[in-house]
Image 1 (tube, rainbow, N blue to C red):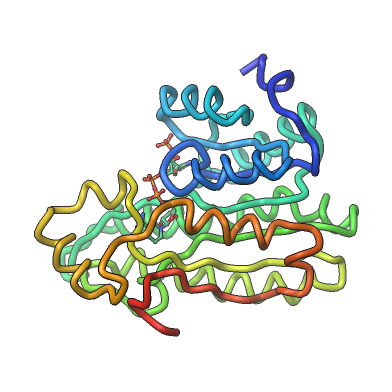
Image 2: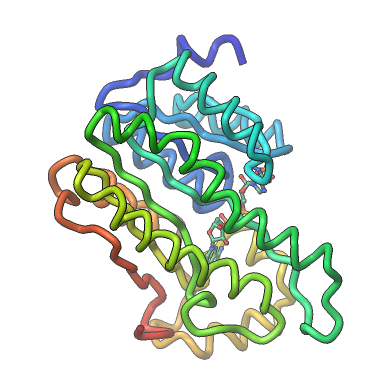
Amino acid sequence: MEENGLMAKVGKGVAIVTGGTRGIGLAITRVLARDGFGVAAIYHGNDQAAKDCRKQTGAAVYKADVVDFDSCAAVCKKIAGDMGAAAVLVNNAGITRDGMLHKMDPENWHAVIETNLTSCYNMCRAVVSGMREAGYGRIVNISSVNGQKGQLGQANYAAAKAGMIGFSKALALESAAKNITVNVICPGYIRTEMTESMPPNVLDNIIRQIPAGRMGAPEEIAEMVAYLADREKGAFVNGATFSINGGQYMA
Ligand SMILES: NC(=O)c1ccc[n+]([C@@H]2O[C@H](COP(=O)([O-])OP(=O)(O)OC[C@H]3O[C@@H](n4cnc5c(N)ncnc54)[C@H](OP(=O)(O)O)[C@@H]3O)[C@@H](O)[C@H]2O)c1
């Protein structure tokens, strides 16, 4: 979008949020923009949600496929040209394709691994050299409670989300000396389109297992991202995994 560059105010630095136009990502975009970052929200196909996000938050929006290595490299290059190099990267884009393993098609295995996990490699690979050169960076990866505890019907999703935790610890070790932090947030069940698409009886059953007696709000995840993205507040937090799940699972 041509007008993006004019709309987005860079302020504290550039923050890229994948899947930043809907659900948890939209709340992250809103909170980082509030905190003075110039936010570039990446989305895949929902142009209307992207337009609404841009209007509501003032963030720039960019269409790209986080599954595709070249698409990630190209969009990060475009964002750097329009707004500046990324100081913050939030890997939030994700999908589910649930099914019991004995019935799971290879397509659904690969789609979930690639969208949730390979995307982190693709996006980090595109920005981390710039962060190393700058001697500064904040990376936050959005995993899931089901990557910590496993979940029936989610072998693909649990594997991808658990993989994000190992990936983040390795990258944190590689990057700490360059003043780059890499942390993980594991949300529990949060009210977004992803969970609204679940059958009501399944959701009711899940809520019964949450000691807080409710699902979380996207903003409750976004505020932790804001803390980790902050230059000073989160500076000594590295390779950490934060559970935000209403007490559902205490890792
Ligand atoms: N909701 C929960 O209860 C919950 C719990 C634990 C963890 N999480 C994790 O939190 C993250 C956000 O979840 P959500 O519920 O907010 O999801 P959501 O409402 O379904 O939104 C997903 C976002 O990801 C984007 N996206 C999907 N595939 C993409 C691709 N290939 N390339 C670029 N962007 C892509 C979508 O873009 P379009 O709008 O263009 O489709 C959308 O902006 C996910 O990683 C999810 O696994 C969610």
